[in-house]
Image (cartoon, rainbow, N blue to C red):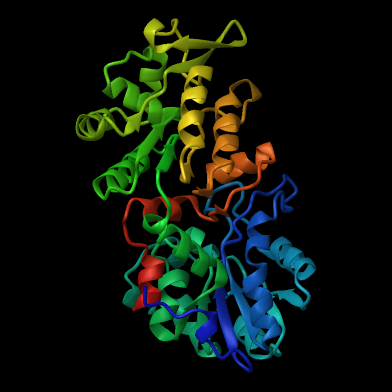
Length: 399
């Protein structure tokens, strides 16, 4: 991949625009509820500041109209605590005042500019050449000497702060971006047997991942769970019950049953389906074996059962590489956290393990699990890479 990294950047005396992804959960009072994403970028920011660069941080928080659509002052304050260099905050992004703040930065100083999504252009997607003409890029780029993209978690988007600046300035990958591309782009070189655990509720994405890794012979085993597993069960002729069927239909996933059936027909020897599911019955967890399907009226599949956990754990114990993407059930409820917790713990024991970010990483933090070789910072971007689709922000750096 022809992307320049910080190793290629002469930092001393330069003013750098650095795009990071610190979109974080907030408390009701607007404070940071979790600083994991900020800590992920400490290495990149520290290196640039220690090498004498002046850093203008670009980032977003939330979505317009959402409860967590907020300014970045709390993020700036936390970065000031995390970094051994001064970090200030500017309540604008590309105005004359913002440009003046950027231009007066000394080497070793950083400023966090305001939420890029406060400007409507940033919530739209453009090809790079059009993104370079937006107000954000056109007005801020002259105050910068180079651009660093460390926001892998947003790399699947084609927004101005992600694809516009590399058209106007020399672009570099930060350490997070570099590491993600190396790991997720190099799975085909890892040891085999190679197992993918595909769970969660992003059915279309997971089917895309399954198709990509099976067609390219990257997977020896694809273990399905969560809503994805339920879709594959229906595709295999199993009746998981009306409540689960209604949920799949209401979420717009019913049409993917045919896609799952096609994969089973062609690659069924490498795709594993749940042997049982857990439902709520009389307020408690109750496991229903496939032979006893369908579950009772109103009982939706909320987790995989113990037989599935045992079978999948045996496969993971013999795998050399495990890629996790998506939980096995409604892990936020302790009653239905068993499948996700046990499968993730088994994966952590494998020789080499990769976590696909998003809900998967959130579950790992919830359960306090460790021992994974790589935990991705990006759910959507990681999925895009695993499906073999290009990432617009990465293509912009290549160009």
